[in-house]
Length: 312
Image (cartoon, rainbow, N blue to C red; front, side):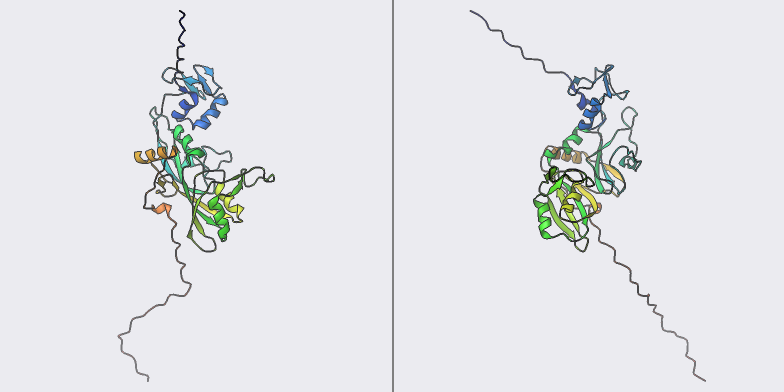
């Protein structure tokens, strides 16, 4: 009688993937951490690692990024920032324009270092409104994935009055270019159709305002959508992200509550989240002030009690 050898199960690889360790340490989002590894900026126990997917244990291995030793998982921070126009959504800018990091006060980490925050998604230079800032690379990566379908709500001011047919196109999904607006179109080869969007008029007039909710975040998507129906976007303000609603003044920020962080985690997993029913002041479109009258102000003089003189 022969006995069959039983194949022993292979041991599961130990530790976490290197890009995950970098993201948890607050170095960058998962996607950007992968590029940092490929660029040869990471050393493990003195050896440069340029391969994705290698596993390590930060409690045992000495991991350095740009020569700086990691001290394990950093305390995770989450902030809502009201980005004004005229700031770039990057950590630094080669053109020396103001960055959103200049709006954030310095936050101390557990080892005396400043917490390295980075934005979740982007708002372009001329756009304003709600921007998430965090050092949680895992959550930032999950929220940025199109598959999550996290709702982002904007107030958009348009030049001219779009036709109803054009607005219906935007609601159903409209074909736009993938590249930047200033790039020359190469026929209709590099085009993509947007996901359906929620769109409603907030204020009419020659330059109306619309509230628009998207579940994706393509490069300059809002501007391209309205350009396709022949209208220029004058202003963009993001007022909602998942269950969050903008509730801080321009240029200021606040830390998210544990409940808000939990809601973001649910949204990142594709679960439905419901925003607060009451819209905060900074997420509303303010009523324009009435113009002052150009007519001269009338002065009312009280009746004189002095006796009138009789004519001589």
